[in-house]
Length: 393
Ligand SMILES: Cc1cc2nc3c(=O)[nH]c(=O)nc-3n(C[C@H](O)[C@H](O)[C@H](O)COP(=O)(O)OP(=O)(O)OC[C@H]3O[C@@H](n4cnc5c(N)ncnc54)[C@H](O)[C@@H]3O)c2cc1C
Figure (tube, rainbow, N blue to C red):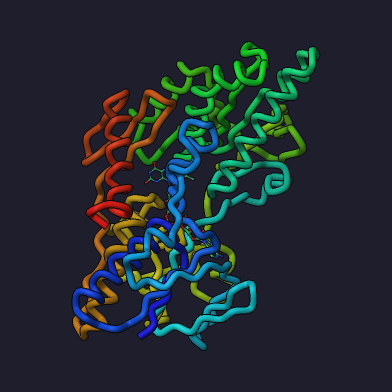
C-alpha cells in the first residue's frame, strides 16, 4: 500500500514518523510518502519569536531530510495544487502526480481575511517561517527609515505596528514586539518614544478560549508592556499604512499584521472535498473524510468533532500532533485488518506567551500566569523538540 501524507507540519510529520515506525516494527513493506512545499518542518508556534529576533532563525525550522534519514519515509518536496479523490491522485504544481491508496491531509491553515477590503493586499501575515522573516525585515526597515527622518509625524507612523486579531498569534506577537523594541531602537537609532504597538480585536476580549480571568490577565500584561489594546474594534477596511475601524476612525501604521483568523486551504474545496464554512475538510470521529473512505485529515485543515455540544476541536499544535499519532495508529490498524479506534481529543490545556517574561494559560486545567506559566510553555516546546529530534522520535 502507498500512504501519502500531505503536509509536514505538526500533524503530518508526527503521522509519518509514527506510522513508519509501526510499519518497520511489524516488518510490513508499505510505503509512506510525506509531501511538503518546503524542505523543512516549521515550528509554527514559535514564529512570533522569529519575527521579533527573539530566537535564532535556525531554531524555528528542522531540515526534513536529516530528520527522516533513519526512517523509511519518502520525502517529496513540492507544492500541492489539487487532490483528485475519485482517481486517488495528488497533483503538484510542477506537473507531477502521486497516486495513493490512503491519503492523510495535514495541510494546516491559511489566513482568513473575512472579506475586509484591502486586508489581503496591505497586511503582513505570520503563518510560515518565510512570512516571519519577511515581517521582521519589514519592521527593521521601518525603524531604520524612522531613524533617518526628523519628521516626528512620519516617525510615529513608521514605528507603529498594528496587529489585527487578539487570539494566540496576535497576543504573542504583540508581547514579543514590545520586548524587542528597546534593542530594535538601539540597533537602528530610531527614537524609543515613538514606538507604538496596537492590538485591535473585534470582540470584547482577548484569548476568549481561556475565559474571563485569562482575558483580563492578558490585557493587563500587554498594557504593562506598553501595548495599546483596542477591544470591540472592527476593522472595516485596510489601505496602505492605514486601518479604517468602527465607522471610519483611522489608525495609521507602517506595519499592519493580519492575525484575524484562519481557514482551511482553498485547494480542499476546489478539489471537491466536503468542507465547512471555514473551508476545513469535514471528518468523522475516526478522522476519516466524510464520504471518502480512503482519505483522512488532521490538524488545522480539518473540522473535527469535539465532545458533544463543544463544536470542533481547537486549532492548536498540541491537538494537531496528537491527531497525527492517532492517524498513524488508525492506519496501521486498518492495514492489519483491525477495527479503528475513534479519536478522543485529550484536553491538556493551552499556554500563551505575553512578552519575554510572562505567559498565561490552563495547563492540565490549572489556571496559571506569570513566569511559571512561561517556564511551563518552554517545557512543552522542549518536549516537542525531543519528540521529533531525540530519543522520543
Ligand atoms: C504565531 C503562532 C503562534 C502559535 N502558538 C501556538 C502555541 O503556543 N501553542 C499551540 O498549541 N499552537 C500554537 N499555534 C497554532 C499552531 O501553530 C497550529 O495549530 C499548528 O501549526 C497546526 O499544525 P498543522 O500540522 O495542522 O499545520 P502546520 O503546522 O501549519 O503544517 C502544515 C504544513 O503543510 C504544508 N503545506 C500547506 N499547504 C501546502 C501545499 N499546498 N503544498 C505543500 N505543502 C503545503 C506547510 O508547508 C506546512 O509544513 C500558533 C500559531 C501561530 C501562527
